[in-house]
Amino acid sequence: MKYLKFFTIFTLLCLLIVASFYTIKYLVFSPKMAEVRINEAPEKELSSAEANINHGADNYQRGQYDEAISDFSKAIEINPRYAQAYLNRGTAYHRIGQYEQAISDLNNAIEINPRYAEAYFNRGGHFRFHQSDSDKSSLRRSLY
Image 1 (cartoon, rainbow, N blue to C red):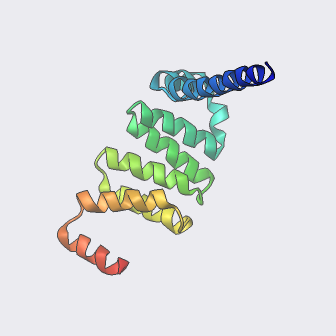
Image 2: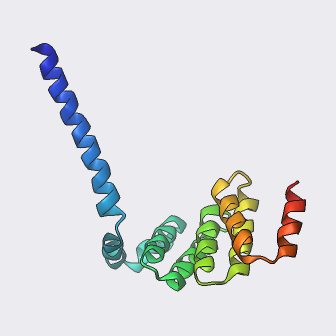
């Protein structure tokens, strides 16, 4: 009987944890909720770099890339050493076809944080799909 009670409590806790993860995944990070969060945030709350990053991520998720770039640029103005802001802005530039700006921002993110694997990954993807053969060969030479 003692073990049955323990097993029941353990099972309920596991179900609660799983339900929490799904709630976060599907409600907090959904585009519809992003729109609600943006509409609720007054302009004065967007003064910090992190708030601008979050606002830009919401705009990016909704497909409003120009607004996202503006938000990421504000974050960079507040904190010029914010590698994530450069990464996000570079990704948004890529989505609107401004590949040179995207590469430049990804290079800045890597310069700020040389261990930023996501920036290297994104930069490699941009080079792979949007650079000429001579650019690719010079990239290979610089890596080896």
